[in-house]
Length: 524
Image 1 (cartoon, rainbow, N blue to C red):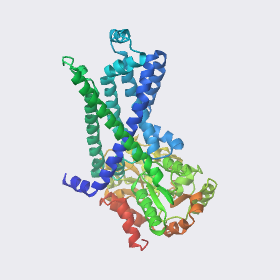
Image 2 (image 1 turned 90 degrees about the horizontal axis):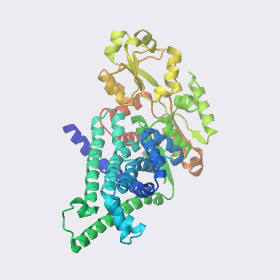
Image 3 (image 1 turned 120 degrees about the vertical axis):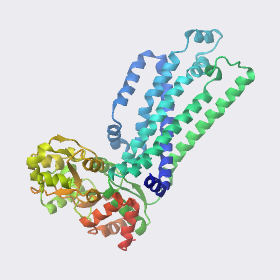
Image 4 (image 1 turned 180 degrees about the horizontal axis):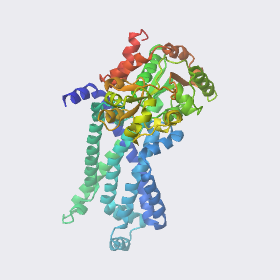
């Protein structure tokens, strides 16, 4: 427990910043959902024919996995807050629309007849009778949506939206329990806080005689209750407007020279992204936005093509086999030149390799290697039926991953259980799986003392790290080329593995490791 508190204290400023980002995204999303959901709920309460299709559609949306929805939105809304807010809004609509409709439809018909009988118009009946009576049910729907939104925003960090999910995913990728808890505990606290605040608002804005019908409501009490509800409503509206303004303001502040540096969601990528960002900021007058920890290859690559980011570090084998569907090859020069030429046709310039080769490897525990005499991947042919294989989810869906492995080795395992990133190391260490896919420069290979099996049939491509940048950016900022080229050949396999180890095992931040390494090389 002491380790957690020490770790939490060391990153307290980052946690606080991400905590406020999380609050901002949650309130903004729920606020938009309320502005849409309540009018739609009122509409379908008056038009039963619209009720089934609208509620049916919102139910269908709820059934779509959130990560799938985020991935689908990227080509249209890009990365960052826009798709995150859109996703949270549509997931928040169901409880708000449904509760609004239920609250309005369950009002005693005699009450409505009485209101009409004293000469109230339809609008007056809605504003002075129906909505106040339905308010407790409507607020319950908003309360559910708000608490759920806290969880949805955590997932949205997967596409660079920020928030506490950034710490959770970073911790998962590095098997850092303290980092996971540093994001998860504040997120849980925020969910409880949101539930309490919305519950308080629900109590305040609900007419007193609905909460306690036995209360004798004098004219003065009615006036006081209305004044309190009005003040709270205006205050809540003011807070929402302020948050929307704070969200929009940064878009207008980013003037002058700005470049967005992206990365995927594992340690090495975070280090490299920070290295390039530090170099650009130090050697030029260009401001850098760090859109790091974006997720899978497809998400990051599509962000580059859509100009949501301007550059990121890719790998030759990934680009050749997965992004460009060029099959397999053992000729690293051919792979690089093919990637460079085909990417150029898409307006993406591939720079010279950074130096290290971060290829896919299969790794096992040392006791497993000794028991089954495993030295190469071919040795798995005999022992595979007794072993559980846990590739990463990305490896299990790539032509240059599981397909290339099966084409060369045709392995049969006791079970195939794909698992994401750093969780695989926890699984193999606890004996839940026996064979793991990893990257050759992973610091966690050293941490968990795993044995790498030789790829004796050269099934897996070479994966030399290569910066990829939109050509239009280099045309606009020609000074960038020389700065980026200072990284060419700078890192070999062992150096990159050591840098990853500093983050994965010693708990250093990627920002710290990147900055210190560049300083040690005299580049900053």
